[in-house]
Length: 153
Length: 119
Image (cartoon, each protein chain N blue to C red):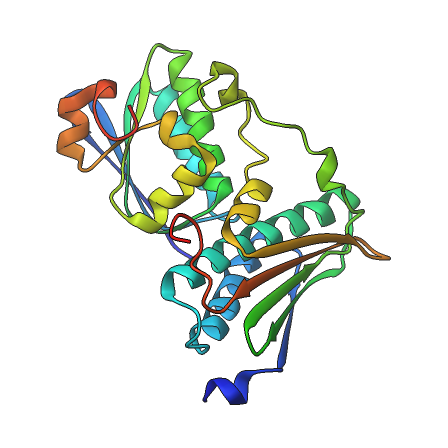
């Protein structure tokens, strides 16, 4: 496949909202990202991690809401980006309401074993958007071709 | 998905070597193994992450929980990691300042919590 053939296509994956399926979502997204030669391996690793975090949050939202629905992972290849949208059918959340963690040098930081996922997503991808949907939350992750990622750009 | 969790003794440390992918599915097994070690009285633990292919925030949560548990027993939890893609996760979250991260088990055993990149 050439990049031209890939651009503009949508690939959708629906997974049961169970922990064992997060690895499958990672696998599909990284395989699709690998077939797009415009993303460096390091950036594919970043996207894989962000997708893992988003799917983990989605599954936890389903658990909390007692939802038996599936989680939708939609990948869209663009001319200059790869976009992954993870949609849950849990009850939704407001990212602005997340508590701030104390600085890492603060001994109280050790009280926080959770809540590292969203900061990771924000750091790893070029663009992230959390939007409420009728049934839950959609997290849109965008990786731009040619962007260098963290620490290099 | 396989998660390898092997334990060996080294100079008063329990060395827990983790292999495979640590995510929301496998993290509970990792957490249980750490808790088991602590309840067996192993309060100086080295977690060797060299065989880990993938680690996300659920894995970080297990490590933070383990460190907290060990510190409450006056113990410590040291890490061994040289893979840049795994180290990156610690760097982004600022946890390189919380954990002593060593290049090898030998360095961790020799350096205690005072050595390594994270100290």
